[in-house]
Image (cartoon, rainbow, N blue to C red; front, top):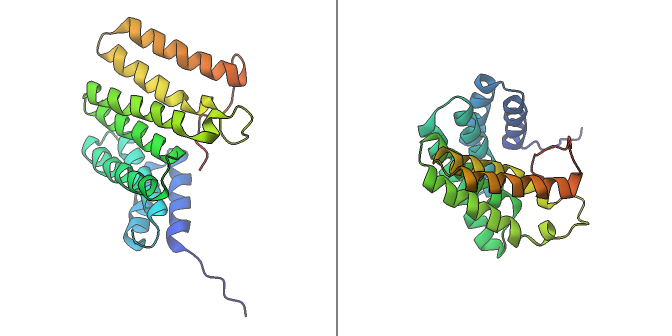
Length: 190
């Protein structure tokens, strides 16, 4: 008999992400919480960060600003530590900054949110694969959410002109990659 080791944390995280992406927040949350309780930060920082991400996203989807901020701060902190240890930025660090901005938006702290969206865009620009037009997994269009969120932050503060120019810039970046009226996913590669 062959015994195949199963990473229960990874399985639970895959299930909670699947439930979350289908809008089943009430099913996703206990799976994510179980995964977080089972998974050790020392064992797998990457996985723990992703679990905090899902819990932060669920909190956003259920309008729980306190939980959103708590889990997204942990997600961002872990991604910053990973980037520091690796000596380079990655997609999930950019994404974590975007998510932190979303948490601040939920708390009506738009100026703080702007900072995180701008940081996310700067991080995207520092990722070598992002800058290569021929890279199959990366493209400048992956930063679409950051442009949309930054534009919304400016709009909510009444700076409609800047909001419009940011949104138009993001739209141009996306059209350059995928053409007009694209149907490509805005999901980040992991």
